[in-house]
Length: 554
Ligand code: GLC
Ligand code: CA
Image (cartoon, rainbow, N blue to C red; front, side):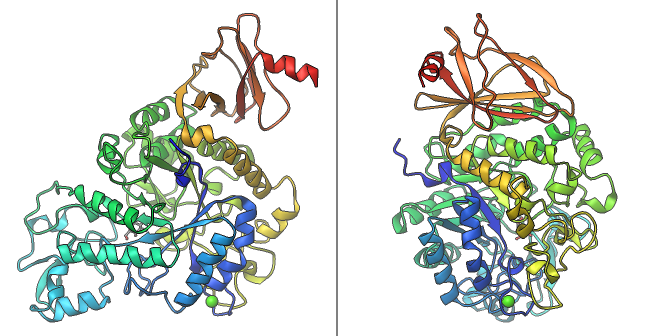
């Protein structure tokens, strides 16, 4: 296959305009600020930005309650600023993905306002109504403990409306052809303004059948995904959809399509949860199973691999015992947990700020089959503020420097409080200090990202697991176009010596360390003995024995 599929070897960085950099002193991040940081992002090596919702919104769910799909919230800037931004990214060789939130609108959206106030309006059928309270009203709640039902009575309409998420997010009736056409129109609009695709929010719910008569198991209309994808390709050949779809591994092919005719990318929630279990228990077994279960196919399909995102770390797919192990290791206090299924902390505090464990986690994530997605602030090891409600604790402003409010804003009232106390306060954790320190997490991350891009085997290739004789050391070998790379990760906080033989080992092979000078040569039987330090990791290029000869010549 030709190399045109840019997302196969990309590094994606997720950023929220509102908490990145404020330039006009109103306490709210803006596009001008984000533009000032494009060189920082290019320097870090990311090749694509995923922008969280920035459209006009009452902001009751961090912008995931959109009130106008064709605009920029005036607090962040204008459409003109947006085009300057995508242009600035293009100049630096970075692509832009934006959030596409079309499962629901804000209840303030003019469509819902028209729908609720006039039963004869064409918008009435853009939403999902019922005269009586449906039997399933307490079923399928997404935010247990916060959300009480999925159907509420609208006082103006005098009828019940369906909302999969919060009550101020009425679901769009996505089965209505007019709604489907509008979704395409929204995509077309932003493509025209320079984006390369969409992180599509809540995809299983977008394509699910909705209504009072839907039983416990809604039926997915997968064909809708093919229509979205076809439209994108007609309008802009390189555009993709990256789906948020936390579904069972057996279902993922329905989203990709057997021949790749549906979506290009999906977040790998299954691997994500088992990865945290592996970090908590030092047992690679279940993670290996999750990777086997979600082996990427067809050739155009790609997983988005991540550690933390802007939501809680959802552990809903783990077995009860596994879930309890992750809670105990990374979020033992009730205030660290959320919705009875997840952990709401940032990565660094979860790992006790231990640099070895942070490197292990990132090295592992960067070498999982797929494309890495990094959350802003994680590159400097930012922390969380558990005093903030729900998921806001991990959405605090980016910590740029030791200036007041971390250099995020000159206002005394930032949109969310800047972390200014404890070990993760901006005086200890900020980009300016880390930029000057060659050993900082930021500079380490930059080097790792550079190396990741130079190892396209991971993004493009096929993988297999190599036996290390212990469940605590994970060994994966990637192959692509006759090149191979071996990645080792010691999940345990103790050193371990491992022995392994690679399949090319008929005559033996040399393992060339990509991150430091200690290469590994095989013994006479073609076997390698490698000492892994506590939480150690290795990236090796697998070379034939003639590598030694060549090296001796130089
Ligand atoms: C997705 C988003 C989440 C949001 C929800 C409703 O799950 O990731 O942040 O609250 O959709 O739009
Ligand atoms: Ca501002």
